[in-house]
Image (cartoon, rainbow over all chains, first blue to last red; front, side):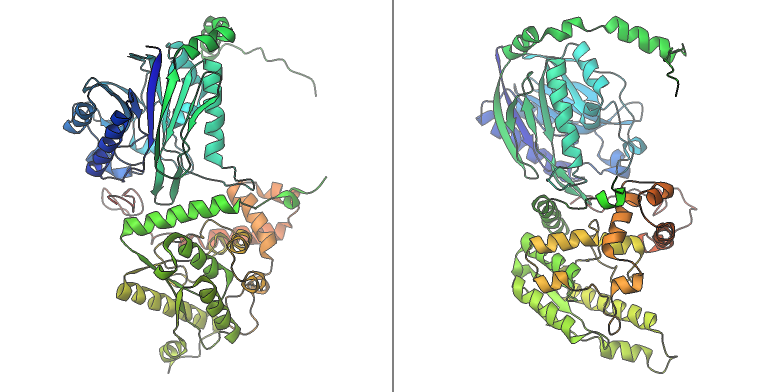
Length: 291
Length: 279
């Protein structure tokens, strides 16, 4: 397929109210269907809200749960990416993204890197995923990152190495540290990261960030889609619920990669060798410059 | 080279900041099921900014200001509070608390002015929460970050509230935002005072200016500079240590009562439930 009609929906989940959130997802899916979208992307933990804390076990869902199945069935042939708390058979809970299509759940990407500093305390409540899960969609291979994952170049690189052409980041990023020119901590770092992922990994970069507030956290939205040249294809407003459909030219990926063919020179062998060598305790042979 | 302390810029884009705070307020009122807000109006800039933000978020018809002068309050403060209410188009009511405070201390030992100030602050708290119950209005606090960090407030008095939109703004940032939102100029520029006795000003009582201490607090708390770096940045060591001592000494005012752990899940320790759960 040459084109992907992508819908992004930056909703404000109700914290702990799965029923209300399912209704909201269904409304988004109905809208996307009217817009003839192929795929709709919702933010991180879109089914549960973010500050679930000690209630993860009350609201976590097994992948085969009727709630998950119900949304997939409702979407029918349309693809859906949403965020939920995954109750795993090993008794652990994961901050996960579900990929649904064809009326059923197709796969799950667990959040790999859990933020655990300052206002974040995810490692207290969740286990971390242990692998990148490429998803072969009708529009090409896709990788999903969950919020903090996207601030680690290595995770985007692993997805690139796994063959992702479309890199989707779902997020629940709160506003912080507002500066004199309206700059804002959370936004600046994601803006930079998304542009780097798109340009340096030669991918379509999709970023869907939630809005709404929980306790004192105010989530800033500002979802965006970038082409592999890091040009903006679509941008949603900040702080308000919003959704939009964007038509993505999938051939732009090959074109961008041919015109800027840096990826073919990637030295995976070197990276593997150096990481392995230094992690095994081999000397770095750093050059000492006299003071 | 200019000292780091003179390079600190606490200015926050007022449009973005107002937008974020309005979003917070509108959401909290919806989630907690309140249409109306009540707050104490002292005639000072903090409560004026709190009222202005509530008007932006809820509309003037949903905001009530209680003006609660004690025997020690100046008449000018009451006039300023009325002027704030008038300029915002909100309802206000004057409820003098002198008789309650006098009745409370009647027949007892002669209280010092700190005790009188505390009882006045806690009387105002009772008026606000009683209004809350009687009129289904949420009590909105207006203590700023400088006061909260320094412990410059009465525990369960003016610090008591359901939500506080100003709690992450330093005093100098309150001034900037109040100016942006059109709070009467005189209220923004006058010397801040808790109005506990005639001629009292915060800066005289604290022994330093808000401009100075806000820059120090920003570097100490938000950016986590060490004491040695702060002295190097141009702050006198005694000032740094005094402010640090105040922060440490007032942590109890910013916390729930400490509960000893004997069970599996203890409130305040490992009972992790968000206030917004299920809203």
